[in-house]
Length: 410
Length: 188
Picture (cartoon, rainbow over the protein chains, first blue to last red):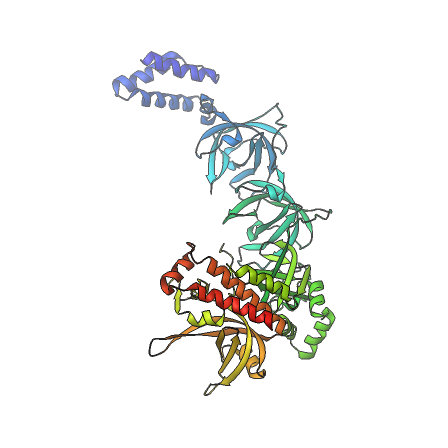
């Protein structure tokens, strides 16, 4: 038995280029097993460790060579705490967020991409974006059901001659393609709306759209990304899809990137019509002020992003239209508000100046328009119709009533 | 993140059906949970929209103004109460002369008398003066909404089930009410 174990050990050291005499191994094994009654397995381990120390062989160099680690594809990674080898290309290197981390980013093969973390303590060679590598003995990890791989002291990196050309980079998708959560994607979009952030952890929230539709986005304050401006178009890179109540959204985090694009992306939408009574006009309507930096509506002269600023006047109406069955929030921009009310922005400013009160405008609009019936139509963005036509409804004619009466007879 | 707040729909109920309603409840014990009124045709309402004619108004307040207004639709009378907590609505009532068409968005409210009768009234959120065309549209719309509810009364929708259990309504009465309101409009 001692001979067998001894041979195994010698072979393994031999593979790494260390020649250890049989006798030395056997002597140690004999002592442990026969004299001290140590179980064979434990003796094996103990002897290996002894010679590693004796010959000053780094452990990391010795153990990975054992070769049981499976080589997998990125999409196969579905459990954490597994040792794997992957052949990947470095898709992106991200800004390092912690001194204990040497490099962090995304790698991918033809089956997908995955986040990697290379610990500073691993002492591994520098990875270069766009190059392909064989990662040996990396550990899978997961956080909130997203998988990643960690490169630690036991891991190896070999530059691969084989260029993983077919690597699927973070795919650039259209909004209508987003149908799963927890996927890294790039999207080319225009900012359709910015909403007021309800939480300090959220820097910006709103809607972005491309020709296939619109989607909610959340930009975390921690992401420290540049401010998105309503109406401008951007390439949003490395955003993560998410879903809530069956509705998809995207989140922009620390690893996301924003690039402004010169092209004006057109937002494709579904045009809808809604008929009902205007039952309310919401706060933030009438004469308002917007932040000159980001166009956000100011609340008491304060921008959620830029603090106290000299605002720019604008006119808008957030009308609630209700048909007795459902509620439709409707947003009238300056042009449509002016058309409906006959009050121009300049006149509204004049009214407010005369009254020394900005709210006279909303009060006047409420008094004249709430409680009446309208048909509104325009593209529907999330819960709003962005009204491009609003028509007050006149009297119902008798033929229409006749038709309804006949429908009610059973 | 918290789900987006959804605004309560403004239901369309004729005065007759509103007067017949007496089942008021909350969905949970939370003090902020909205109060609902279930009507005989199965509308579970926390808000309503009425367009009807103001016929009488009276300040019944002792110290502060407290207005009671009677507004009439083709089927009956709604009682509207507005005081210091509904300043805008109270101001409109104070200023208008009857008769006048009013559009009212408000919350249903119930009051139990000593003999156990439940009276319904409306606490307005906003009141606006409107024209006859708006009133006519409301009558047509309210008739349609009422008929839709009647047509669904035998469904397994929880509101319909509960309304049937509580009121055992003879829905033909409400169907006729809606039809009469429409015919009345057409002959005018």
